[in-house]
Amino acid sequence: MSDLTPREREVLDLVAAGLASKQVARRLEVSVRTVHKHLEHAYAKLGVDNRVAAVQRSLGSGQRPQS
Image 1: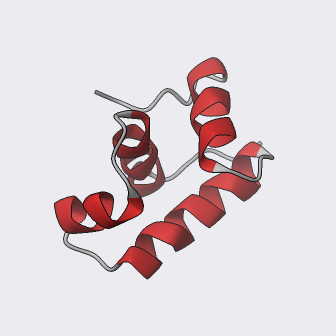
Image 2: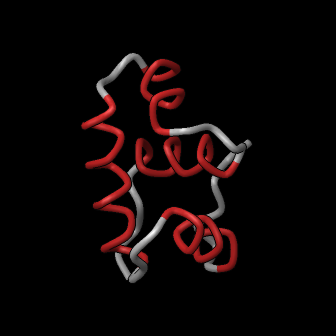
């Protein structure tokens, strides 16, 4: 499994905190499409296909989103 980029970790951290994609986009000053692309890349690296599984996998794999 490849390491997540700092931005992918940041997006997952915000998702884990309960933010919706639109809220993440506003917080990071990027488009919702960019947030979805970061999530898509994180899903592929983590071997999952949705945001809940990505957060769970990242928490359990040492790729813990940083608070």
